[in-house]
Length: 230
Image (cartoon, rainbow, N blue to C red; front, side):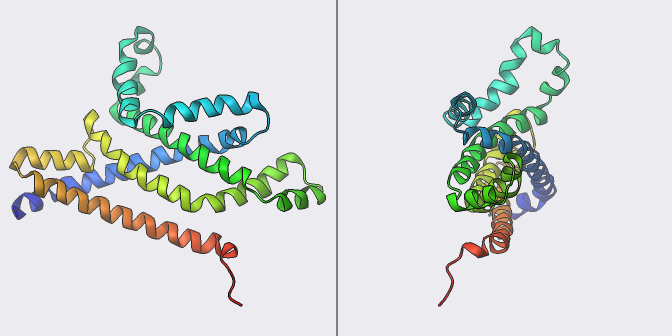
C-alpha cells in the first residue's frame, strides 16, 4: 500500500469531495424544483398534460446519463446557432453542462417517484379535503403534495444516492471531482489501487452521511405510517 500517494493526494480528494457535493446539490435542486409541477402533470387524468411528461421521462430514463452528458457538453457545440446564442457562455462551461445533464436525469426519475406517490394517495384523504371545501389548488398544496412527498422519502433517498454516484461521470468532462482527484493521483504515482480505493472511501462516507440524514427525515415525517404496537 502506497501511503505516501494517499497522503499527498488528500488535499485533492477534499477539493474533489467539495466539488462532488456542489454538483450533487445543484443537480438535485434543479431536478426537484422541475419535478414538482411535472409530477402533477404526470399524475393528471388529462392525456394532453400527461403524455408529454411521460415521453420526457421515458427518453431520459431510457438513455445512459453518460450519453446525455456527452450530447450536452460535446454535441451542442457543433451547432453554430448554439455557439452564437446568449447561452453559449454557460454551455461552454463543463460545470454547467454537468449540472444540466445531472439535473435533467434526476428530474425524470424524481417525476416518476412523485407521480406514483400522488396517484397512490388514499382516496379518503382527497374526499375529506373536498368535504372541507378546499379548492383544487388548496387540495394540491395542502393534501396531495405534502402527503406524496412524505411517502416518497424512501424512494427519493435511493435516487439521491444514485445521483451521488452518478456525479463521478463529471471527471470525464475535465472536472476534478472525487473520481477526477483519484485519476490525478493515479497519473502521478501510478497507484490505481490506492487512488481509487481512497475515492471509494470518500464516496462511502458521503453515502453513509446521506443515508443517515434521510433516516432522520423518515423518522420525523413517516412516524404516522409505522404500525402501532398493541
